[in-house]
Length: 124
Image (cartoon, rainbow, N blue to C red; front, side):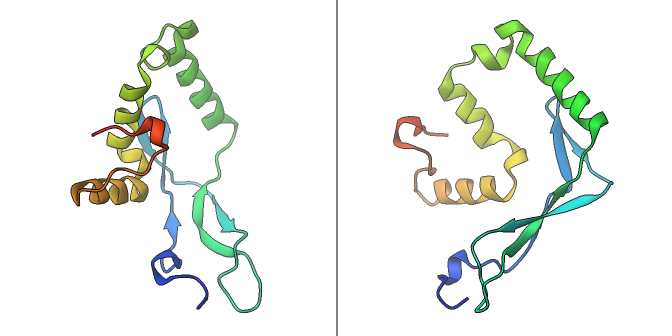
């Protein structure tokens, strides 16, 4: 693990306990599945456990597809007709990104630009 800079070492697991459907974060109370990185953080090569995500099934999949279909509204919904810059502001401002959002907001608050591809850079 000494080859990985300290700021990039995995020292806490991220266990996703919510899922997003129809603009709402819902608490997940069911089974989870582990998430691994193929990048090893040990002397003896082995995948690195990053955390876990909800192990959702058919019911949740149908719920998500129905909500997405309703929001898309044959290409006339709010999201598909929104300007890219406004979509970015929505995503950066959303709590669904959790840790990543907090890092981006902290970075922005410290006077840094949020790390997006150059053509997508916007002030938030």
